[in-house]
Image (tube, rainbow, N blue to C red; front, side, top):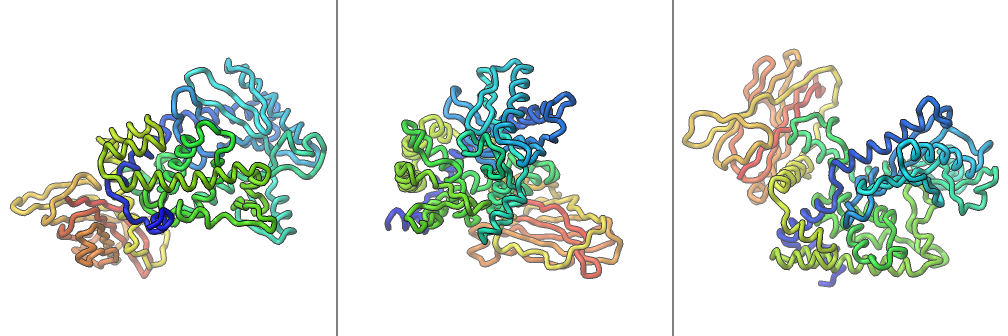
Length: 520
C-alpha cells in the first residue's frame, strides 16, 4: 500500500499512535487562560474606541476578533520568546464615497496611539494593513487592529455581476492596504475581506460535531450548554488544523517566508473534513483529500478559492513565487509521511522519537508524559461525544412544540449482583460493572395525560458484535402523573446514554438532558 492509499483508507493506525496524537494536540492547544486574556485585551480596545471622548465614537466602532482565535485553531508558541497573535477588526460606520483608505487608517491610528500611550505601552506600529500593539515583555501578546467598513452590499453586487454567489457575502468588509493602487484616492474599489463569513463557513463544516461535543462537556460539568465557552471545545477539524500548523512551522523553521500560509491549510482542511470523530481519523482523511480541492485555471495556475468570495484565490501568490507552491506540496507529502510514522507506532519511546522529528522536542516529550486527570477527562468527553454523535442514534420524529414545559432525569440508581441497596450515580460519574441493572427516574411539569419515550443509545465493540447498537425510542416504562421510570440491564461495556422525551397530542413538548453511563 502506498502512502497516499494509506491516507485514503486510514488502515494501519494503532491505538497507541492515535492516543499519542490526542495528547500531542492537547499540548499544542492554547490554555483556556490565554483565550480569556486575549478576550480581555480586545474588549479593552473596543471599550477604548467607544468611550465618550473617543474620536471614533460617532462611527459606532464594532471591534471583534478574527483569525485563529476566532476559529479556535491557535497553537501555543514554541517558546517564551514567541508571541500569541490577536487579530482584530475595527469596523467603523463610514462610506467609501467620502473617505479614502488612507484617511480611515489614520483615523484608527490616532486612537490606537492614544490607547498605547494611556496604557504605558510602546507606540502603536503601522504595517501594510494594520496597527500593532506590543504588550510588555512576558505578556507574550501582540495585537493587530485592522480598520474596516461594512461592504456586504457592494460585494454581493460584484458577485452577481460575475454570475457568482455565496451565502456568506452579507458580512463582507472593505479594508485598507497601503499597497493598493487606490489607497490615497477617493475611489469605490477597496480590498475586501470577510472574517465573520469565513468563520461561519468554517463552523458549518463541523457544526454537528461541535454542538454534540459542547453538549457532552455541559453534561460532564453539570452546566447549561450556553454556559460552555466555544473556545473550550475542540473538534477533530480544529485539532487537525493545529497539528498541520505546528508541523508546518517545525518543517519551515528556517524558511518562514515561503511556508504554506495558515488560511490555505485551514481552508483545505475545512473542505476536506467529513465529520471524522477523532483527530487521528480527521488528520488521515483530510490529508488524503486536500489535493483534490486545489483546481487549476486556464493558465495552469493553482486555485484555492475563498469559500466566502469565489473571486479571491488564496493561492494567488504561488504565481509569482513558485517556491511557495512547491513548498506546499512538499509539506503535504512530509505531513503524510510523518503522521503515518506516529499513527503506526506502538511503543512510547518510538512514538516520542517520531514526534520529536516532526513536531519538536518540547511538544513530543510533553505528549509522552501526558495523561492523569486531564487525560481522563479528555477521554470521557471523547466517549460522551461518541454517544451523542453515534450514527445509529435516531433523530426525534415528533414535531416540536414550545410550551414552557420541562422534563429532567432527576435520579439514577444502579444495583449490582449480590447487593440489595441501590447506589445513586450522576451522569458520567464512574464506570459501572457489566451485569448490574440501572433505574432512570424522570419528573416533568407537563399536564397529564401524555406519552413518555426513552431513547437508549449504546456504543462499543461488544454491543456492535452482538448487533445491539440501540439508538431508537422506547415507549413507556413505569408511568405515573409527573413521574416516569425505566429500568435497563447493563449488558455491554462501553459508553451509553439515556434521554427522556415527553409527547403530548402528537407533539414533542419536552426532553431531558442526556444522561451518560459508562460500563467497564
